Structures are given as structure tokens and as C-alpha cells.
Amino acid sequence: MEKTYYSGRVRAGYDAGEPLLLTPYIEEKKLEEARKAAFVDPGYTLPDMESYSGYLTVNKEYNSNLWFWYFPVADKPIEETPLILWLQGGPGASSLYGLFTEIGPFRVTENSNLEEMKYSWGKNHSLLFIDNPVGTGFSFTDDDRGYSTNQTTIGENLYAALQQFLTLFPELRKAPLTLAGESYAGKHIPSLAVQILWHREEHEPVNLQGLAIGNGFIDPLTLQRYSHFVREVGLLDDKAADAMNHLETAVIQFINNGEMLKAYAIGENLYAALQQFLTLFPELRKAPLTLAGESYAGKHIPSLAVQILWHREEHEPVNLQGLAIGNGFIDPLTLQRYSHFVREVGLLDDKAADAMNHLETAVIQFINNGEMLKAYAYYNYLLQLFISESRLSNLYNYLQDDISLQGSYVDFIQRDEVRRALHVGNTNFTSIGVVYKKLVPDFMGSAKHWLEELLENYRVMIYNGHLDIIVAYHPSVNTYNALSFSGTADFKSAKRMPWYHDGRVAGYYKRAGNLTEVMVRGAGHMVPTDQPPAALGLISAFVRGVELDKDTAALVDEKKDTQRRRQLPTN
Image 1 (cartoon, rainbow, N blue to C red):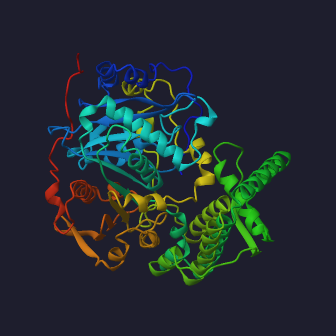
Image 2 (cartoon, rainbow, N blue to C red):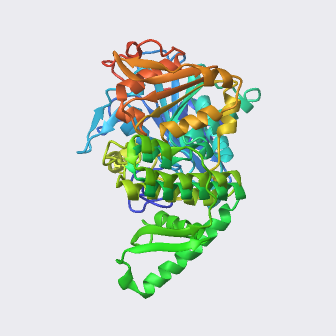
Image 3 (tube, one colour):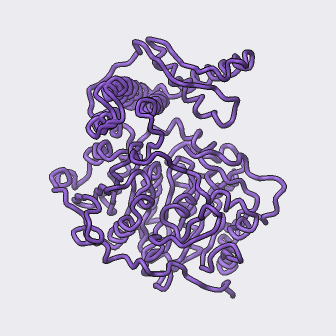
């Protein structure tokens, strides 16, 4: 996961101006003044292009604010050109990751210079990036109660921000809107979309046309079975996969039993005791630690392990090397998920995949029983088991050894001149951190029911990179096949077809009703990063309602300048 660079709201000792709160301008109908204030003056730091940024207040009681950065499309009518709202996952990952490394107009080089993104989605779309939920990236709250603890609140906050944004830029009311994002945004996107759907008769219209979810963590219950996947691709052997499968089974049991808070409290208490013990015997800090036990300790051990994992950046280090659970109090199910896949592709052998399969079964049972925190703990244990057995630390693309979830952009946005231009002042930039922890009890919850409702009203495209492990393609298909909507029967019987980009098979798709499912070849978790041309072609086709039976390269002008240049607006 990404690390937290700062905690709290304000960094001391820096001169970067003040955060720009736009809501007071909007409420007083001072829209021109607000737009002028939100204009990002590139100066000598940013490219000479038109963009706007600032804060939208979503909860006045707690002073909770969401930060945005908006890039109008170049050389096209704003009212007619599709608008893409991009949300990052995490939960708690900044949308700046997507901007600077995936789909934005420019990237930060290793020597902290900016260069144009050749396949930016801004070539033929307006782009809006929002740091979401509150507390993510540059978004902030002045009260601990301002952090979201569930997807409903997240959706409500996003909707409040979107309505204010469209009031500030009314020319975008008619622009076709697509909500897009990846990973944990597979929950954020439906959360916002249902708010748009439910309030469409009450408030100013939002021209929502579709949802595009990449490698989405939509429904954890149907995503289980990592053990099958990693065994099939050869990353784990049978023994390790079997152990992983036991953990999956436990996670499912915890979720089904609703024992989320109980598991979390046990882990916290054990962690506090362990830290005191290691303070008393500091020579043991460097000693390799294994957590071991049997029977019901099969629940306690992962609870403690995830506490060690979560707090590894904050407290004194704990040299945890492994977990050993004997005769764990688990009731495995024989469900086929990730463990089968990783076995088939050679990432695990049969023994390791079997172990993983047991853990997946547990996860499913916990979810069904409502024991979300236990399910979450075993889900994390399952992933750690895979890493331990396969020796692969990159769960986002199993053909790549390393991945950076930080990037050069993190240092770039800490510059005072950049902060002044972006109107964030000395507000701390935070990735994952508190936002993630606040959502742990809701982590294993599902957005599937919302997606089913949305499929009756909007077009939905769900795409997966076929090299991803963390939200792997084959387990994701379980989620898609479990969707209940008017096109379910047609979707299940639909023929899978090849999709071409620039003359090559870029992936495969199937469509029925409002649902389009796409597998992208040669891509992992971050599809736009791994396959930039194909990703641009794919999103260009979807937002325009173009079928994938034609080569999507025809929709992309690679030479087009993404930069819309304009002087500071005047009254």
C-alpha cells in the first residue's frame, strides 16, 4: 500500500499560500470571481495550459473539504465533449496518482521535470480529478468525525462536491459525464452514481452517461479464491495454496458471522501487548518473529498480524517473518476462485494453491456471516501467504518485479510554488493513512447491489488487466456473472469477442444490455499505465457509445496536443 507522507492538516514552516475554499463563492453566486480564483497560474512550474483547482466543502460542521483539479479539453466545444471524472482506489489513494502516472496531461520525470503524456485521456476528453474520500491527498477535515466510515457517506460527499463543481462550471451540465477509476474506486464510482440516480428529479441535472471501472474491488465475496489463481499461474505450490485457501475460508466465516469489531479489538490488544514486550526486551526487535498457534488462534494470529502491518510506518519495527496456524478453527468451503487461477498459470503449485483455496473459502464464509473485520484480516493473510510462497511483491502485475505507488510526483507537489498554483496552501498531502483505517470495517462490504440498480439506468464497462493478482480477472468474472439485472441471461450467454487496437488483439470483450466486460491483454492492475494506447482507445469508444467490433485506434489522434492554452480569465 502507499505510505502516508504527512498526518494531520497543516505542515509547519512553509509558505505556500492559503487553501482556496470555493463553496462560499458559490453560495454567494460569485461564480466568475470563484473561477478566476480557481484558475491554476502555471507560472514557471506547470505547462502553459488551462486548468482549475480548489476545495469544495461537503460538511460544514466538520469543515470537510474535497479538493479537485479540472482540465478542460483543448480545441473542442466544452458542452459537447465527454467529461471524465477520475477517482482513485486505496481506499485513500490520491487521484494525483492517476493524473501523473496514468491518464493525465503530463507526468513528472525522475529529475522532477514535467513532460507531456502521449496517451493522455485529455486528448479528446475534459478531465476532472477529485481526491476522495475526505482526508485523501489534499482533501481534509478539521474533525475526526469528518472521515467517512462507509460508502454511503462517500457517495453523498462526492455528490455534494459534483453539484457545486457543475454550478461553478455550468457549461459542463450538458457534457456527457463518465465516472471512471480503478481498484477500490469500484466501490466509490457506484456510490456516487446511485446518488446521481436517486436525486435526478430533485436537483440540477447531471448528464451521467456511464461508468468505467478498471480492476474494480466491487464485491469482495465473489472475488475470493486467490489461492486457485496463484496456483494456476504457478506462483504458489500446493502446500502454500492450501494454507491460503484455509485463510480465505476463515475470512468468509468472519464476514458471515459479523465478528468484525471483535477480531479487530483482539488484534489491537495483542499488538499493544507485543509492543510493550519488545520495549521491555529490545534485543528481540531484530529477531525474526513467527506468530503461531492452533484452534481458535487461527483467528487471533491474523488479527495481530494485520495490526503489525498497518502500524509498520508509525511505531517501532516488529520483525514479523511469518504466521503458523495449526488446526485452525476454520470451516473450509470448496469454492473455486483465485487459487485455481494462479495454479493454472503456474504461479503456485497444487499444494500451495490448495492452501490458498482453504483461506478463500474462509473469507467467503466470514462475509456471508457478516464478520467483515475477520474476513478482512484473513484476506490480508491470504495475500501475505501468496507473497511468502511466490516471493513476488508486486501484486499489481505478476510479470513485473517492482512497482512504485508513489512516483516522482509526490516530491513535485510538495514544492511551495506548486502548492500555491494548486491552491492547497500548507495542507498536508496524505496517501492511505487515516482514510484507509476508518474504512477497514467496511472494506469487505459490497457495492454489487448498487451496480445492479445502476445497470438498469446507465451503461457500465468493467475492464481488467489479465496480469493483475490483487483484483484478478478470473475471480472478477465471478462478480460479473453474479450480477442480477435485466440483461443477466443475455450476458451469461453472450459470445466473447476479440477487441483490436492498431491492428493487434488488445483484449477480449462481451456485452449484453448495459454491461460491457473487457479483458485487456498485457496489462496489470493499472491498465492505462501498462497499455496506454489501448486504454485510450477503449475509454474513447465507451464514452461515445462505439462498439468494440471496430479497431479503436481510429478514435485516437496520438499527435493531438492535450493542452488547452488560455490566459487568466477576466471579468
